[in-house]
Image 1 (tube, rainbow, N blue to C red):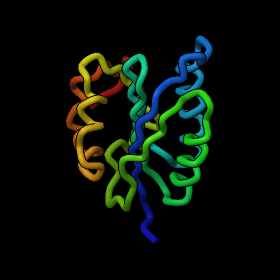
Image 2: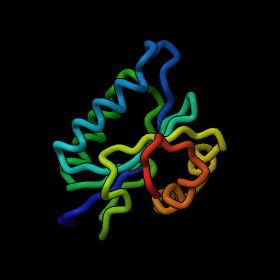
Image 3: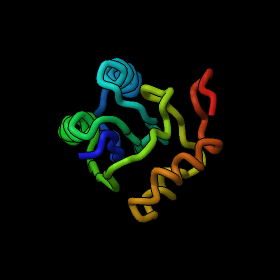
Image 4: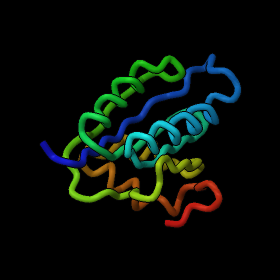
Length: 134
């Protein structure tokens, strides 16, 4: 079994999600990910999420199951998961970026295995939270 695993999924925020849902997701993700050795990025465009995760295989796969069952979003689609040689986001327990440029929509049209690299390449098009260095 590989020592590192990556996964990328998209989903949509439920229309009835309470105010503050995004902040709660980011806060919880950062705490959980830091404790469990997961790094990655969550991108949100006001309706759609795209999240890239990397870490130990069992930890990432377990987290994916929890996320897929989370009732705050719908239409969970796993686009890619697989072995990873080196972390892409090693210093970010959970970076957060806003997508005002249609990055998520473009990523959804790509073959799954190229989405992680395409997301990394698109970072300059995202409104990343202050303090994140690329």
